Length: 117
Image (cartoon, rainbow, N blue to C red; front, side, top):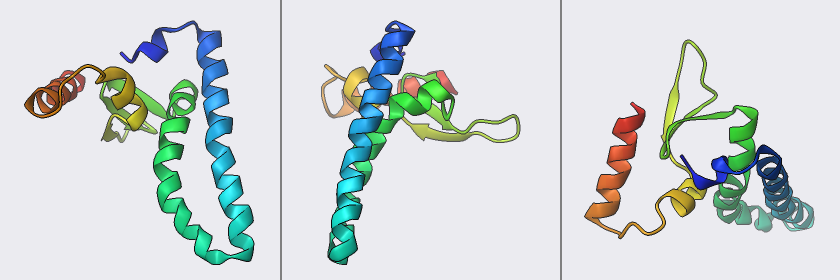
């Protein structure tokens, strides 16, 4: 499991809410500026990866994401449906740190996916 989720629950919630607030701030700036200059909506293309990174811990804590392995998660899991995804950029940063790019990285990710399945 991701090192972040082994922290004390209070610390997890504090950091998740902090990341959530920091992740929402760029969206607010983009929308405020884009009201006068619609071309700035293009910045949303760059904002989406930031939001995904920042919102991941919060979504995990409230149950939107359920992890089956460190790099395999389900979005809004239910008894009838699982929408499986590879880990987010947050997971890649914390779980895959120290794994060399190339075959070693690919094999580690595949191992985590098979473990989750």
